[in-house]
Length: 318
Ligand SMILES: C[S@@+](CC[C@H](N)C(=O)[O-])C[C@H]1O[C@@H](n2cnc3c(N)ncnc32)[C@H](O)[C@@H]1O
Image (cartoon, rainbow, N blue to C red; front, side, top):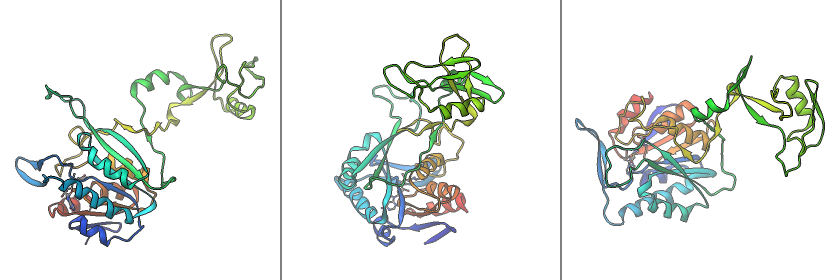
């Protein structure tokens, strides 16, 4: 075993053997980014053979994935999550196996690149799937935020005051629904919406006291609360990740042919583990998972059978 840093370890070997040595029920999150059965040989560049072979006979791939999942299950804590990364066109075999082993599965759609100019007779492939899998009704889950669309921000946060730009938030209940019924005086005007308010009077009063009510210019129009851009954490993360670009489009230098962006691993790790928790990557390649764990204060165990990755991992993490 190589100790990369106090909290990050690397074990060189076949994960089918090494996984048997990991403590049972010890890991909060497993990130699996295996070969995709692409029938390709991956090399870093025309000058460098660094990489691995992704060619399989008959049912060997399915058998391999089955064994990996079976070995991962006992290692995962009962409230842990396994994230399985695969290209959209090869998702069917892993999905079948994952559904046999996990009760809760949510596919995340990662738009890893923009549309391609070099395809003529088929649709350009831009999506990878990351299956988020758990066997607990309440797995470890942290809400993270995605940044909002620029166009949306420009259109919505189009009011401003001394605190900065703000959007209008609804505080009046929609027609046909019933809210809190009371009168409220603001700037010598009495507001008494027909279907009531969405918030209690004390909350509305504190918005007023803190200058967080938008004064309508038109007579008879509704009151709104101000939602400041500077206080907006973004939108709660959805299952469409179109805001993280592949290494080819970003500034990160590619050290391994199939290396994933650090920001992708950071998002996965933030969602499915807590600070100090243990993350496992059984086929870690260039160690992106370890890098993200180091940044986020998680412990990390990485495995790979390709001895070339050790130097890359050391260079990235030490
Ligand atoms: C898609 S790459 C992982 C890339 C990685 N996520 C990164 O960011 O660099 C898949 C890796 O699986 C490794 N691998 C394939 N079969 C393995 C096995 N049986 N045990 C351990 N590693 C394996 C390969 O050597 C390769 O590095």
